[in-house]
Length: 196
Image 1 (cartoon, rainbow, N blue to C red):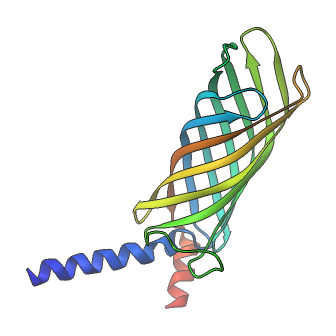
Image 2: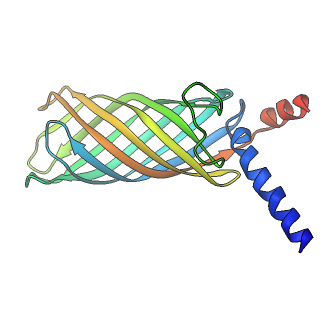
């Protein structure tokens, strides 16, 4: 019984410190938002189903830069036609460290972060209206690490699109649920070994 309790304590200690290891300089983050719900600021609320694969490299501890691809369909609740959304661009993510001013490390297995994106995106609507333009977004999120290298994420984001086609500015607030996998590289491993 003592051995089982000791193993449990070691596992909990390992998980609580592992949130720091994933977001170190030299690591990679790959993942995707899977489910999304939007609250239209100028077009009404609705639903959307989409994938937003993303990959980012940690250029410094807590700071990742990379890219994303956005593919999805959405339907606004006011009876308008179905819309197909697409986009590609750059993203940046900053993870808040425990102990930073205003950060209460909610659960030792996760981290708060801010994410922003900028790219080219567009939408095609069933009735023929379409637009392509500047795709941008910013918002806070939380990543809960279910294993040392896999995080389940929630992200609330202001998402905008300034179009060059039939629409001008289109914006909404989205709530996204997804996951990320954190992959250590040999550079990250050597930095960790130098710190020991």
